[in-house]
Length: 167
Image (cartoon, rainbow, N blue to C red; front, side):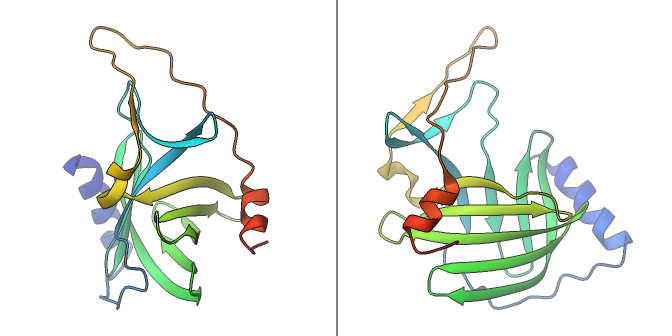
């Protein structure tokens, strides 16, 4: 973990008066990594520049990895909506929300819906980082120079949510 980025974001929240109150976690899975779909199968992908969308959730914070590194976000509120839907209100460099829809309990696959400052939501397909070895891994090896990244299948997240009883 890039300690500088994490410490900067954490200290900024503390300067703004944020207190990190321990709460009972509502979700068993703590560490998430992005899944991609290629030719209708799911893969974990290690990009050439090592940018892999990851999220870690603990009892008081959510850490979101960006191109700059990991950013701390205070969990303002968390709610288990039903057995497979979770909502988090977060305070970071900006206020934002994440809705997590667990669409495959056995494989621990979820759709993350992220909304920043009332903008249109963005979606990611995520899985439990601790069990990601159940999926093949594609590695874009670029030892000497940047390589083109793989073009993955486009996922219609709204259709996938609807198919799983949401939206």
